[in-house]
Length: 330
Ligand SMILES: [Zn+2]
Ligand SMILES: [Zn+2]
Image (cartoon, rainbow, N blue to C red):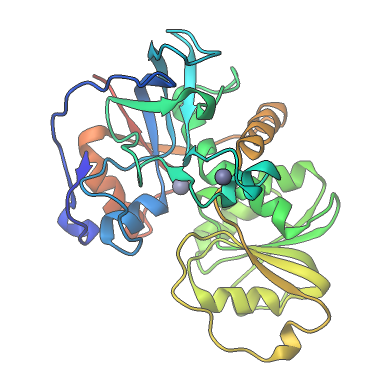
């Protein structure tokens, strides 16, 4: 399913095309995809809110499948292995960011489904050293949503500075928050969930949230950290207003239109606002280990590959419960 020209999700911007089977470069694998998660970033790319870096492009950066070819110099993988392909497709390895364990900030970083063809396909190539091993406890379909929403949610938890037992606010309660709450509960955190949706509030309570409310409501206590998942600038300010002194709002969004002006008082006392950009392979490995240990439960809504436009349109209309996943059969 290829994007040639961005447009409204309701108009079906992706087209089903037949491409030649990919051949791996020396350092790459070819993965036969069995499942690929549908992410809000794919929607933003398809609709043009996130500027395309290359057109045409096959979206999809939460792909799970089986290695069917191994490049000549690719190490550590064999045909038949199960592999995950996530957002970070490569980084330079030599810049100051890469050398200081922050490859997510590498200026030369390339991304799956943005710079290179992604997982809305029967096959894709991945650099062997950026492919991820997946815990055995997860079926392909259940593992797919872990690869973006899960890992980014985990990095957001780290960036927010939340500590075990702390009070954490989650603003918005979609696919990524559903996974983050399970990690935070595992750490013994007290969770405050802010969302407009009654259905999401009920789900948050079922997953152990201590309190639920709307974006404009104030929890009964000040929070030690907050993560915003809603791609709305006002929500960042609302989150800031709930924080304890010295606490951080982590913004889990690759695209945000703007943050409205607010009183400096809200930021005073060393409160901070931080964005969360991509993730490192280390984040992914740590999160996947944790996901297996907890174990994290994912709730997925399956679509056929040819229904990718439908999945994006439903995501745009807020009609997806949990995570949409394309189930791919050759
Ligand atoms: Zn680099
Ligand atoms: Zn994503």
